Each structure stands twice: as C-alpha cells, then as structure tokens.
Length: 52
Image (tube, rainbow, N blue to C red):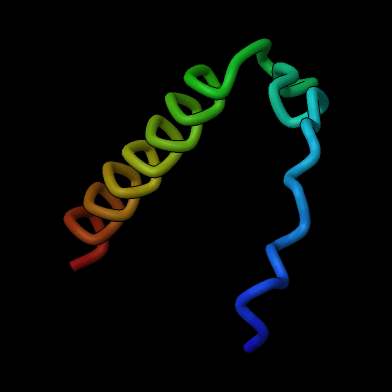
C-alpha cells in the first residue's frame, strides 16, 4: 500500500438521517418488531398447550 495515498473523503449523506417512511421513527419500528415477536411466541405457546 502506498503511504502517500489516502482514503477517499467520506461524503455527507443526509438521506441516511431521514426518518423511516413507516411509523415515523426507528424506535417505533423496533417496538413493532419486538411486539410481533412476542405475539408469535405467546401464540405458539398457547397452541402448543392447547394441542398437546
């Protein structure tokens, strides 16, 4: 590697800081994902209990 060469400058990308188009914030999306996961776990446990 040539020591005189430097990495390319990092360009600012303001679109990466934008809010997601769905639910308004990343926090809300993460809460939705965790909530759906918990719902699936509870549903799976209930179905296992009912049919076993």
